[in-house]
Amino acid sequence: MKRVAILISGGGSNMMSLVADMARDDFATPVLVLANNPEAGGLAKAAERGIPTACIDHRPFQGDRAGFEDKLHETLLAADPDIICLAGFMRILTPGFIHKWQGKMLNIHPSILPLFRGLHTHQRALEAGMCVHGCTVHEVTGELDGGPILGQAVIPVQSGDTPETLARRLLPMEHRLYPAVLRKFAQNDRSPTQILE
Image (tube, rainbow, N blue to C red):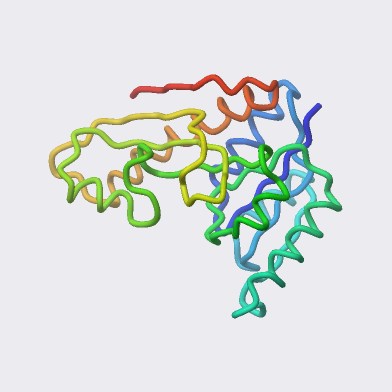
């Protein structure tokens, strides 16, 4: 059974969808939920489910990204994961760190990549006049939001949508897509997953 570490920065809704899916039929097991923010609500949710948790606050490492990533790497090594899922982890990781876990790290991004890499994706989709919007699960590489695409989910953009309404309607699709991709990835299946609303 594959061992999964999940990195978060906030409430952990995508983390919870991954954990719930793993619990359904034991294709993988969560061995660590790690946050860079001590106030991340997802830490308590994971602890309530008996999942080991850790926090490496990035703030004391200001100006020392290598020091932060060394501590992150050390903590992950102790958990010995086969797969690392970034689930709302709001820190950009350096190519040096990513190289150590190459081929084992997934991320979910709230746009139809390669469109709208980086931040403020919902606002940018609306400003571009998109008829559809969505989310992407991809392998993490040294190129920001640029790794091989493993799955995408798409929703229509509605008249009157705001960045907030778009984000709210997209979230349930994220919760469907990420577990579906992880399930296949854990079985060494990298064929693309597509979900349409």
